[in-house]
Image (cartoon, rainbow, N blue to C red):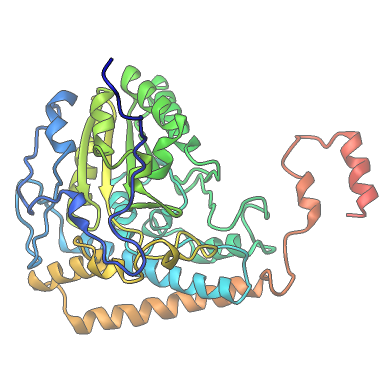
Length: 410
């Protein structure tokens, strides 16, 4: 018999580790404007090539090129820039607040602002988003009050969720932002179910689901794709590939051998792979997917290629598992700088105007923080009363719970 070699498993490794620069060639980028734009009513199978290339609009000089360049007026572009910049300033202030022990935990979306903001501006205000925990830009683009967001972080007496959720796990039905779940992946099947219900009721609203590259390894992701494809649910399935899931590289979730967009192709879903740091590309791809959903053409899966520039959370130290200056070398750049460059190139903006906007937004965020802190923070001890745990569970509080509440003296 032929002597066979012992079997071995392959464990994906990132192309950069602390002390060694990352080789980003694994991203398989494409030139701006090179990806074709199929008609909105294209069959899912006719989008398979777009799951392996990269849809880009902004070139290195800030010009909008190619078939995906959207028709967006200056007002909308400036609204996008403002929301992205506001999100970044908000994140920065909240990270500092966490370090000052005013809250227990925070997660920023540094480097990913274009994905949520451009997508929110393309959606209708009453379309429902089912986010994961790095889409605060959805709320900010929809002008949800910063004070309410901060009170949720501080779990204070004005917390809209009464201290029942971890910080950053916002919820607002009025602003189309479904409750964030810490059990990653559940929001995907919830979004598909919500979209199916909307269609059953003859409604006009669509759902938009969000998941990270790491959580695509959860069974909920695959279950959601099956139901969305079979029932042609009016839903957009967003995969934010920011290269890192906590401390594990995206290859561990299956991103080494193929793209995450390719999983949609295998399920019979129209699929796109898009430069997530290109505001115009995000806006255009979102419009395309939204029109498909509203036209009864079913789901679209979009892989947004971006980079988590900061730590996974305030509990994480990314320098332990990747180069500390990785983001500076990420080939798709900074989404805010790229849109700013485009606006200046188009004669719609200037460095002076940008500086004034940044100063204005910083004062707006500081003012909101002062108001939110006046209602209490973790450091001040002004938190939601423990009595709130008995509220909103039953229409009428049962006798045994009423007795327990009395025994606790609350």
